[in-house]
Amino acid sequence: MTNPCIICVAITGSLPTKANNPAVPITVAEQVESTQEAFEAGASIVHAHVRNDDQTPSSDPEKFARLVEGLKQHCPGMIIQLSTGGRSGAGKTRGGMLPLRPDMASLSVGSNNFPTRVYENPPDLVDWLASEMLQYDIKPEIEAFDLSHILKAKDMADRGQLKGTPYVQFVMGVKNAMPADRDVFDYYIHTVKRLFGENAPWCAAGIGPQQIVLNEWAIASGGHARTGLEDNVRIDRDTLAESNAHLVRRAVALCEQYERPVASHTEARAILGLRAG
Image (cartoon, rainbow, N blue to C red; front, side, top):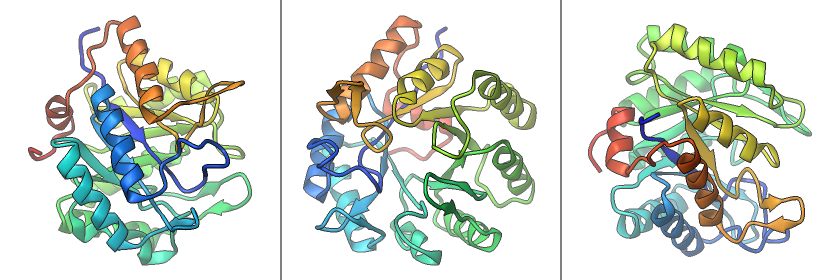
């Protein structure tokens, strides 16, 4: 298999703290340093959240602005993907950073259960976030926690609400949502190809111990892979990951095993139809 594999590193997220793993980057300076190391290890996309000083989630556009500035300086060409996820804010505050014009932003197009709450993505908010991404020339990454979310992305694309061919990420292993089920995973791939074309790019993310499982399934199946401390703070049951780069290097090793070249940021931009960095 010769098609390059895009590796996305989800550096921080909204939940892990330094109590879970001291390597979780919280401050903007820590995030930039951690991303630079992951970039040099092979990641071409950074998926970013920001935090308050007490490690709680934030949607502060000023923090995002400082993070974007630092990433552009220290990781030139890397694809910057900002999170509009619901743990970081409510309503339109979730999209307050979109005027920064990142290359990409995550977009959850439907609701589902999370471990202790309902992850709410009401249609009016989804439509507004999509319209902001169109306005600011941002490519959404569709976070699919359920099959219906892939079908919703098709509906939105047909209505002209999404830029270009949707880039769908399968998220598996969240408690109370879709587990890491191989038959479902394979049907997700089938659905993406049926709806968006045989060569439509897609990605997969696994939570906790399922991270390495989904990394391998995606890389072996011709898709792209997400790793990072947002989703998983361990290398194995007994060992904490040393850094985001540590997890990226594990994904790179799988690419080598399955004879997939790791995509450079230039190749990743071409695959996803993004503007030059």
